[in-house]
Length: 180
Image (cartoon, rainbow, N blue to C red):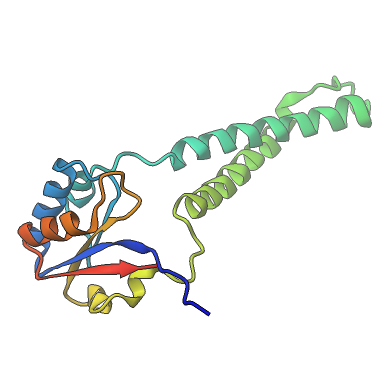
């Protein structure tokens, strides 16, 4: 019985400082790599821009969720008071929308919050119990004092040898191929 072939996840470069990671990230993006990810023990100013990250669609999805929630809250009140169970209370009209503003607002907030949380988790690929980088040597030091840059194999321009050479010339202390 043969062992199943493991696929390569990417090439991981280890850097000593935030400045060298930032410079390498800018070089990786300028070289045309689109699927690269940087890991640091603290936020590095300008790193997301150096990798070419843009705005996230979470804000737009949250807005859409809020609009859907507002319309659903208003429709729920309208249906209950006008169609399903109309009551003549104090001579007010059945379609008395000012009384429905609190429910409409609360449904807007509820749907927006749930959509924001769900879209953030889905777009981040969470929950993910295991990541291939967890088995890379020295990757545990990313939470202490090391900086890592990974060029993923999903990139259309990826070739393991050229990516390894590229990270070495970008100043990486060590370069490792990470298997899935």
